[in-house]
Length: 490
Ligand SMILES: Cc1ncc(COP(=O)(O)O)c(C=O)c1O
Image (cartoon, rainbow, N blue to C red; front, side, top):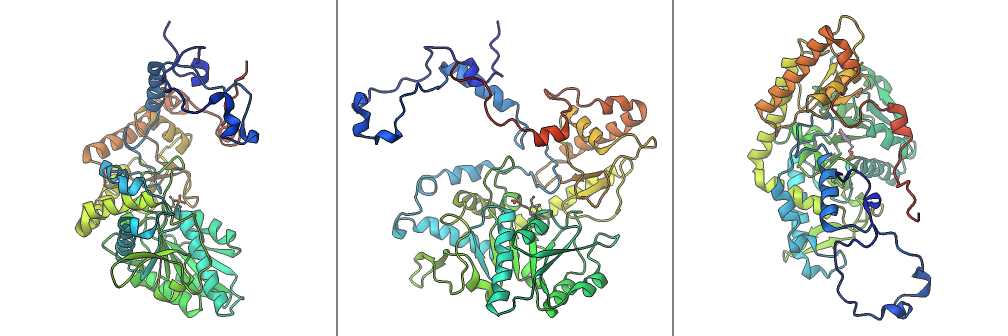
């Protein structure tokens, strides 16, 4: 009988099997309480699975093969920038001097790590055109809350407690309004014009002395670069507010435009999207936040600074800092990967990466627009949004398309987001994909459009080839089974 390695490792366990021999203990195991306080000891049998090495390897190898990841295939998940993460990033992050150090080590023993943080901040400052940068935030949304708290700290430092509103275009990433609300602000949504850009007249009509700031995702969730940025930042500044740039989509514009030069006061990166650090599945990211000089004193501490004698140190001495946003200095390993990527590509390479991300997105948009609705037939940045399939019967939904593309060996694009596009299919190919891959994906989507006409049932029942077919979407989201339900003590 073939062993079912899909079972949980606990269910594969059989008494007496071992995969590893522990060396003879140097401690008196009969008398553990002389080493460990009594209250931490258990007298219960431990329920470790008993399994041989080869069975453990087969179990985990088969599990790993069930994953779909960027190392196994194309992953056009709009808004998420699932680009290939070069393996050199991992090699560098695993180097002893980066991986095996401790935040409490004396500073003179970690000068290299501090220098890396200093240098990565300088590079990030240059790309965004800001003056100063904190590396602490752990992800994009964490960067946003760091930034919005800076807005608050700034206004309050001037005795201005009246500003309780943050304006956010409806084409912003969903985390923007969530962040502003978490920071205690009332969020004012501003509708985009039919061309996907901020409505300047509407903006003028809603700013006032209660405006704390505006958050702009640019390029926005439609993949569009707003053409009126200078007008937007001027309007907010004239009203006494600050302007925040959600730079999670910087992979579209690196080397082409610098938010700091367009009037933005605060800015965050998603280094896991822009600089190829691995993400998805809740893994660690980093969301460095850049500010203009006048906000430096408010930043969370510590920041890495350089003394004149070229030694690097942690600066806790920012006059109006509102404290710390994360343990120690943030996700250091992600910053090592970021710096590796920046040095590998160099400034010309970063610019080229953005150009290719934009080219790939526009290539796909143009190839697909015959069979899918493209509400704005224009030049996009790194991503674009289709409004569902062109289907005369009006029975085929975006969900059907997303399910069917799985049968054809691709990860589905983001669907039903952004909310402002009905039946949205949001595609972000990224710069790391070849023309062959893009053509393969296009052919698959065009085939699906043909199937919708010839054999719609095949779409309605898709996916046909995956281990799990169509779960109840609501139940799958609400009724999670996250722990082992078997009886370990049976
Ligand atoms: C434009 C934009 N802003 C913010 C975020 C939030 O970033 P994170 O998921 O790292 O918190 C994302 C994530 O994809 C994003 O695309």
